[in-house]
Image (cartoon, rainbow, N blue to C red; front, side, top):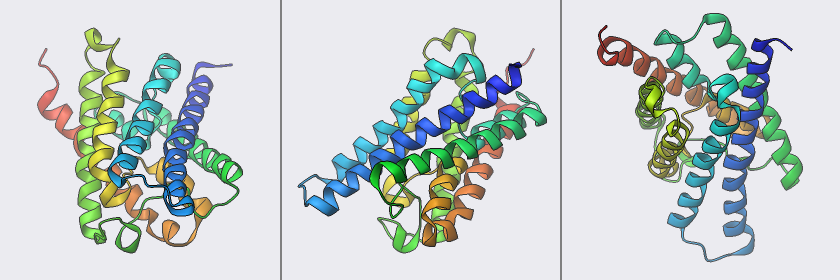
Length: 234
């Protein structure tokens, strides 16, 4: 098997795992609260979901990171492309693999929970815990993705940080989810939003455009800032 195919398969697996464990934890937590009337504080469920996403990144970083770099997110791949750390052909292959992996992961969740009613989708308006509008949701996702991708570009550019990069990235994703979940459910990842939305349909699918465009905009901005301002001069 050639090197490129190995990278694409790794991205497929990694994104699938992110959706299964991250979105799956969100679905599970919501079902405990809604279906069983469990007395679980919303702040606690937010933390649980945040750590599920972050720890998924950590797990994948230390398993597939040496194969593909563990982007498992089209926004991260775009940031790498804009920063000059990735080829266009690899970018296309990564994004296709990530979207397929996220959709497969969402399919597994449908099998696990026996329904496609709630797959940890993102949303605004009535689909947002805070009821924010599309404009606010767009800004939130741009800012959160900008911070996340800029951190990734910075920490992966320093060889001395290679042993802890996965942990740093995972914990940063936890931080981002803690803030973002009440607003949009936190996307910062077009594939993570697209896969569940495709299988859920309805409002999630109608609103998914925002969770594709906003993270990509934030990632492109991070790539530009890194390349123009933060790359050390030779």
